[in-house]
Length: 338
Image (cartoon, one colour):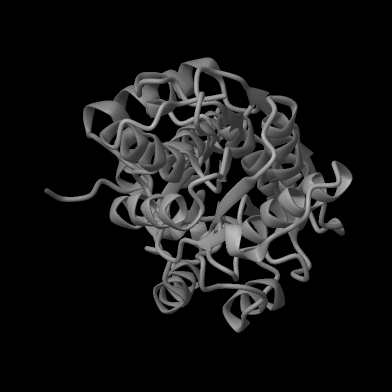
């Protein structure tokens, strides 16, 4: 099908191309009669603007890039929904890419978005990433950038986070308040900042309550898979049968622990109290219901887009922009496992 141009609409109506363009954009200096005639003809001819030409004139693509570790994860799916909702309201489309927790793939995706000339980039880093060269390349090119959830603290860009250290402290303190004396922690990989901070929060809670820290009670999930989470729970309970509390890095890991305990007839919370992290929907379905730390995922997505929009508008209008950080609150959700 042939693409209709502004020139053809202008020729048909006997007016200038400029008048057609202004009429389609509702400029006040064009009469309502002319606007109506232009819009009706454009609709009848199935006219659509040439986005490439528009981009050249406005230097905007009206698209943003979103890179996340895992699309199907409950936490990230809520963030995606929030970003798409906010982007839609502001006239932007979102290119969504999944890094699969791979640094190399993440680098390729950043390169793709730069070549696509997106107006801005939102990213939650993979477990292998930190303040790497591809992130610096975005910043060096003055492309608006917002990190959320998994961030690189040293990167000079806007960020939306929670206080993972405080949340880890609160989760461990909750177990202590429930009477736990020997608390294990199944943590995430060694590199991501949120994994580090939750681990530090766990240690600080033990220290505050005069409970000796034992490194043998800390297990590291490298991939955070279903098989891995069950295996670490099995190993933990075989090596430390007297452990009475478990703080897991995510609900995914915590659910695996609950499933294993149910299979082995280990009574929860009588023999072992468990708390997870993120308030995944499965935490309310599994029996017993899982206690957890609630992360405001939808709110995080909205805040991340709004920060990106603010920077995009500043750069478009030639105003300076200073990166900002937003810290969202978490809360303990106490259920049957504690």
